[in-house]
Image 1 (cartoon, rainbow, N blue to C red):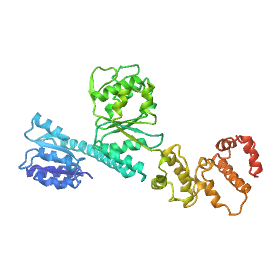
Image 2: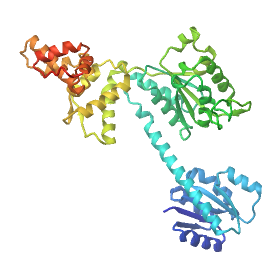
Image 3: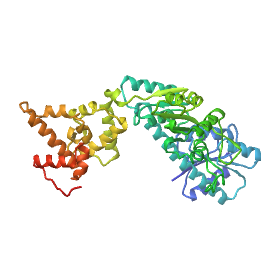
Image 4: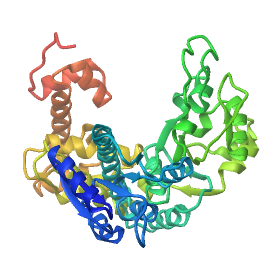
Length: 460
C-alpha cells in the first residue's frame, strides 16, 4: 500500500483529499504546515507528497527543495489556486512531478497521483540497485591484502571524485573492469549510468554509430534516430575496454569529443553536449602502439592523465587463498552449492599455480571445484585437470603417499589418477581425454590397457 502525505493549511482541502485518497486504498498522512512533513519524509515513509504552494512560514516550493535531500525517491505534486507559467516551470525545475491548479477535477488528481507513484516505484528500484552496486564495488570488495593491491585501492580512492580520464592497464582477466566499476560507484556519478563497451567487439562499419549515435536516414537501415553510448552514459561513466583496438579513424573522433565535450551523430551537423567521464583499459603497451603508429599519441596523452596498473595474480600469491574463499562463499550464497571450504592441500595447489588467466581463471576453477567436491572440504582431486596436468599437485600427492614407496609405484599412481580424471571429465570420450592429457589417442588406449582400465575402441 502506497503512502501519500498531504500538506495544506486549508483544513477543508486537507479533509477532502484524505477522504479521496483513502477511498482509493492509499495510506494517507496529513499536515497543516510544511514543517510537519520534514520528519515524515526523513523516515522514508512517504511515496507521494501532495502539497499546497502558498502556506505560512515554509511554503510548498521550500518544502519541494528539501524533498530531494530527505527522500530522493518521493514524487511531489504541487497544488495552488494562484498558478502562473513561471511558478510551474520553477516547480518542475526543482523536481515536482506535476503542478495542479485549484479547484481541480478529482479524477485528474487521482490519475496524476497514480502516475507519480509509478515513478516513485521506479526511483526506489533504481535507488536499491545503486545501493547494491555501491556495496558490491566498495573498496573492501577489491579483495587483496598484498601491498600491490593496497596501492591500487589507494589510487582508486584518489581519483573517484575527479572527472579526469583514467587508464587502467593489466593482463587479461586481472580485474580491470572491477577497478573501473569501483571508481564509478564510489564517486559522485555512482547513481548515474555505467556503460562498459569492448572496443574489440565493435565492427568498423558500425563503431561510429554505436559510440556517437546516428540520425534517421544516415545510412542504409537507419530507420530511426539512435542515441550512441556517449549520450546513453550522459551524467555517468563510459568504460572503453581494450581501447587499443579502436581504429585510427575513431580515435580522432574520440579525441574531439574528449576535448570539446560535444559530439555529432552520424548524419547530423548539430553538436550535442555530453557530460561523460571516460575510463579506459588495455592489456597492451600503448606506448609501443604509439611508436608503431597504431595509436594516436595525442589521444594517449589525453587518456593517460591517471594510470592504474592492475597486477597479475601471480605477483600477489598471498591474495589467492582470500580470493578463493570469497568466490566460494559467493557461490554458496547464490545457492545450488552446499557449504564447503578448501583443504590446506587444495589451497597450496592454488597458490602454486601460475594463473595465466588471472582472477577470471581462479573464479572458474573455484566454481569447478565446488561442483566436483563430494565432501565438506575441497581436495586437490576436485580441482580442474589442467592444474593437475601441469604437475602443480604432485608435491601434495607425494605427501599423501606412504613413506616407503618406489618411484615406479608413485609414477604409476600419478599416471592412473591423471588418466582417470581425464576420462571422467571427457565423459569417456578418448579423443577428448587424450587432448586434455596432451598425448595421442593410440597412446592413451595403450596406457588404459596397461592400467587395466576399460577401453572402448569405438569411442571418439
